Image (cartoon, rainbow over all chains, first blue to last red; front, top):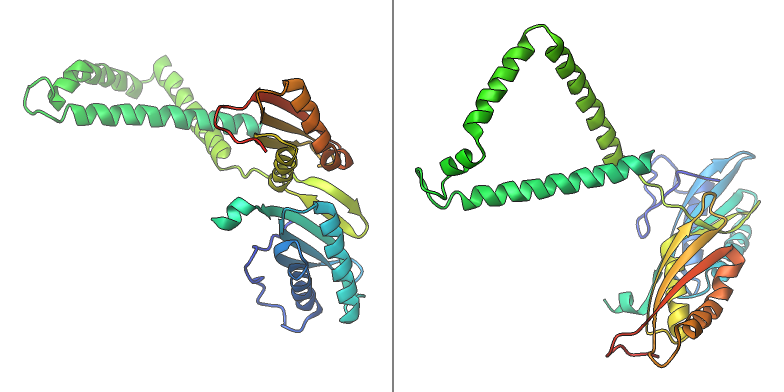
Length: 111
Length: 197
């Protein structure tokens, strides 16, 4: 578990001491971009932390639309794993924690 | 412990705010007139017997300055006040960590949800089932692997409460059962003018 990793939704992950091309940074960006592109996901923010074994655990926070949560989260996880493998980051990707933070409802969307 | 301190801090805050509002209102009211008129601050001081209080406090302070049992009691009371203040500060400032409902957990990581989106899904399910209005509150048990969903719904007058409860329970089952969340449903008749889907 990666307690303490709490990226702000919609905000860029403020980690200044990580090179832009580091696996950690690339995993964060990849996870957030892949998740945000999935239908049903309103917005996504990701943070990665090093875990034993030379990997990076990713904590993903999602704001979703009014859809079943677990199938959506499983879809997000599956696509991130696939995308990480395609990007050559499969070995670096550790546990992927997904937190559903909020839902976008019709009433709030109109506001 | 923190829950008790938090509740105590809220109570003390409420009482102090009410006292402050009353004091402010009284000061404003008694500022309308001046001198020794009935609605003057001097009149307010007389009503509150502030001159007598000043004498009493003055005697009390004189006794504290001297050695004796009163000085010791006062010192203990002061220490108690400091401890009480620290406890109230803990109650007011302690961070409350929201419990998350664990939807899935394994070697690949966890999937969790805050109570709010889960409550929104529950309300949506019940409203699609025909309830006029619904409000939900999820209490997640320690560990996040189960919980209890309190749901209040309004149903049409033409429908018995038991039927509305049963319908809501059926609508919620697919959402709640996989996550070991028990529903507690309260049904009441919808007020006139409320649209029922």
